[in-house]
Image (spheres, rainbow, N blue to C red):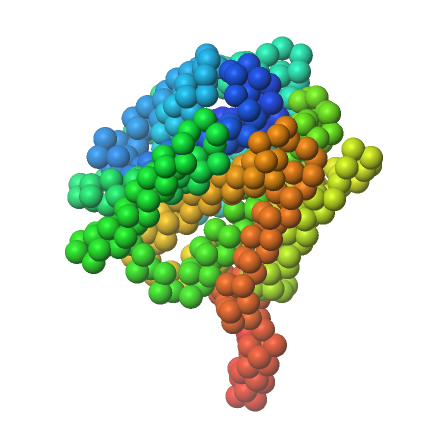
Length: 479
C-alpha cells in the first residue's frame, strides 16, 4: 500500500504539473490561432490560478462531506473536461473560461491527494510514501516544455491539452481499483460568507490588475473589478472578527516564522511566478526560437529542481533556515535579473546553465520555506496554516503574471513587443522578488532549528556546556 496508493495519487499531480508547463511554450501559437495577443493570454494564466485560490480552501470540507475518494475522482473528471474545452476554445473568452473550469478540478486534486495519502498509509511509512507521490510530479515539469514545444511545432497546440486525457482515464481506473474507501470526516460547518468574500477578493484584485492595461476593455472595468476585490478583503476582515471558524484565519500570522514565510514567499513568487509566462515569450518573440527549441531550453530549470532533493536537508542543517532562504532569494533574484541582459547573441549553453542553477536554487527555497512555516505552528492550527500556505502560491503567481503582462504592455506603448520590453519586465519582477529577503532578515538565526537540526553558535556553546556538565556528573555526554 505504501507504493500503490502514492503512485496512483501521483497521476493527478503529474497531470497538473504537465499542464502547467506544456502551455508555456505554446502561448504565441495559441494567441495567433484564437485571434488575440500573447500578452492577453495572461488572463488564461491568471484564471487558472484564481480558480485554485478560490476552491483550495474548501477542498478538505468537500472531501469530509462527500468522501475523499469520490471527490478526488470527480476533480479529475472536471480537470479532464476543462482540458478538452481548452483544446476546442476558439476565442480568448472561451479559453479563459475553460482554464477557470479546469482550475476548479485542479484545486481539489493536489490537496486531496495528500489527504488520502495521510489517511491511507501508516505514519511509519509516510515519508517513503511521500517520495513515491512527489517524484512522478517532479518528472512532469521536466517533460512538459519539450513535449509541449514539440507538439506545438510539429503537430498543433490543441493536442497539448489532450495528452492528459488518456493519462487521466488510466488514473481513474487505478483509483477505483486500488484506492481504499475512506470514511467521510466529521461534519463541519462551512464558512459560506467567508468563501464568497474570499472568492470576490482573489478574483477581483487579480483580474483587476490583469485588465487594467488590456486594450480590448475600457479602464473603468478594471477599476470596478479591482475595487470590488479590495472591498471584499475589507469586509472579510470584519467577518473574521464575528465568526469562530473562518475559512482562512489571519490570526495565525501572529507566529513570526509563519508570518515571515508567507510574506516572503508571496513576494518571491510574484517574480518567480512570472517566469513561465515571460521566458518562453521572450525566447520566441524576441529570439525567434520555435516552441520546440524553447522547450529544450526552459526544461533545464525543472531538471535542476529535481536534483535539489538530494542536498536540501544537509543545506538547512548546515546553515539554518534563515541564512539558506536569504541566500536562495538573492541568488534566484540575480538569476532572473541576468535574464534582462541576454540577447540572441548570448550563448544558448550559458542560458541553459543559468536556468539550471536558478531552478536548483528556487527548488531549495520552496522546500525550506514550507518546513520553516510549519516548524512552530501548534497542532490545532496546522490545518489553517496549511490552507493559507497552499492558497498563497496561486494568488502570488497570478499577481506575478498580471504584473509581468502589465509591464510588457506599458513598455511596448501599444506597439509590437520587442526584446527590450522583456528586459524591462525581467528587471521589474526580479526587483519585487528581491524584497522577499526582508522578512527573513528579521528572523532570529536559529529560527526553525528544531526542524532543520541547525545549531547557531550560541546554541552550540550552550549544548557543549551542558555536555561537559553531564560528563562531570559521571553521565554520558549528550546533545
